[in-house]
Length: 329
Image (cartoon, rainbow, N blue to C red; front, top):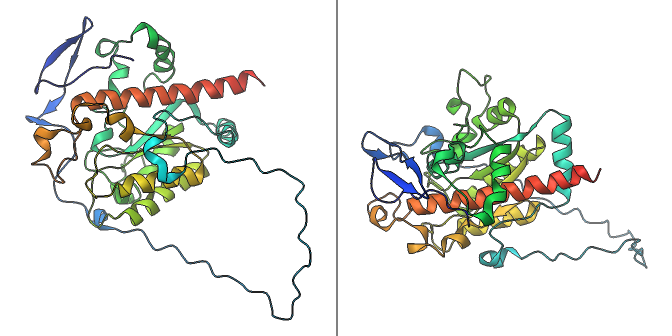
């Protein structure tokens, strides 16, 4: 397993791992994770209810066919894990065949195969997620994981980038709200999500919104997530979803909703919850957890590293799959 940096041990520290040094970034004496100030007006938005489909019945005088037509194809068995079995989904996903066409269309329209974006909250800012891969003195790989360096180099400059759809304290309503977009880079009435994809032209986007916003339920979370996935796919960007380590809502309802979306769209899902189970405290920061809002939402600095590592392995798996596709003509 790759030895990503461990940030544990205190604030403003300098630790040594494998002969390499790294720094933990702390501003104003506080960890730069989620903002806990007042939510924006957008934070209280709830996704609109989807219209209910209406079944149109045949007229009573219409005779039903006496014999069903024989299909001229053999259905492909669905061998995937079912959503209810989400705890056993693989940690690192594979790329479904249908997404190869999405990638090809994206390249034809000018998306950059060396770019990925992140739509997320404080758990996904570069200081906590993936950013150290743009700083060679802050990570190292074992011999078994040395192959990952090729993917680190492939996405160089993206790892530590501050994207337009990720910020501490962000949430789903925020990334769909034009008022939260960067006025210097984004067009009028353009949301942060749309602006990020238009300006950076990523081929992949990791979508992970863990911070609790006002009015969040599993149902409206799922509606927002589907909207984000729909938009990414409409731009021929491959969405990558993630489960979360915490269970602040109870019943793991957010993870179940996330997995259901990944299953319905047949898109990659990183099972971070499963990976976190092998970490001390299941990856949750028990010291800060009791006083955080919500409680036990933050993950440990060790978990930051592990979460980044499995995301790197996922991007490596997707990249090499697409590379093999291109080589095969």
